[in-house]
Amino acid sequence: MENEQKYQDMLKNMIADMVDNKTKDEATEIAAIQNEKIVKALEENAELKAQIKALEKMPARQVNLAVPGNTETVKAMYKGYDLKRQGASLSLPEDKREMYAKFFIDCIKATNVEGTGSRGGYLVPDEYGDTVLAFARQSSVTLQDANVIEMGTDVMRVPAELTNVAVTWNAEEIDLGASNPTFAEVVLTAQRLGSYGIVSNELLADSKFDVVSMLTSQFAEAIALEIDNQVWNGNTFSGALSGATTNTVTCAATGTSPSRHIQITNAELSEAISKLTANKLAGAKFYIHQNSMHYIRVLADDNGSPIFAHPGNGVPGTIYEYPYVMSSSLPSAPAAASPFILFGNLKNYLIGRRRGEMTLEINPYSLFTTYRTQFRMVTRWHGKFGLEAGMVAIKTSA
Image (cartoon, rainbow, N blue to C red; front, side):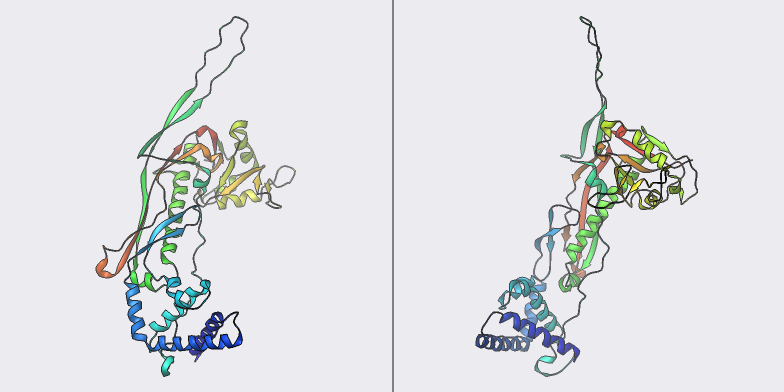
């Protein structure tokens, strides 16, 4: 009876939407006509079932997907119901066609599950939650702040400045002093990063939720966080923490694993700022793991005033007036004599993007006999310091 009542309630709502803004006589006439159509449609269950089978066999179609953390939409192939188009034949507002089309498909698929009578056996729609429970998507810190450049081929050579020219004061008729800048070269070689997954075609066809879009966002998030991991810690990339060797600050206090974060004091944070010249401080930020941030939030200067400025009134949180960014890819439990906080302008780090489009590719053929589809996302990147002297690494004590 509960499911029958759900059906009746949905039916009343649908008819109300159909006759909205009509006179009483017009509304009565429309309601009667639509009721006849609905009863007839449900009684012609076999024909409608065949139509749904045909829809399930429809080839995949290209759709645009919005990926969290990405300013542009990406293209993907999606196999499933076009419910808005299927509901277009109903005399309903456009924004409600998809909901009622899904309702009818659920009714038809539930044939003879429960109840009796001319309609009862068809009126058991599947029940869905309103949302898919998922972790909040994290965007990449380094792809937002670092210097991302497009690679036209698999190897890119970028000139980097080492030293500037020097000028001198000279007396009249005395030769000017000679001075030449020096340069280095940063070589980026694209490396492949990606993954693939397998989904049953039944799930793609039957799910109320956009499985393809969810897969796209999961792949994109995983790739973005791995880029962060590589920029900070290195392996395939040249790690920024270990690469910042020109300017380093070492904590004076000692500690034991896994709580060496407790070594950090206001003195080390202030010293990190002093390591950079004024021109290199433009755009500088602190990059910190959330575990380390705990110990910074409770620090105070010699007068007992907190060095951490709480965000508020449109002003972001700062450390000695410099912004901070937390990243879970930075060391959460640093070892002895290891860098764990970075300070500076991350534009000094180069990320080469050879194939960075977060495009989900689909292969419906390889697993054809098991009625499954493969999804793949492949990108190509590399990263190295461009101007290593523009960053400061804070290290734990030995």
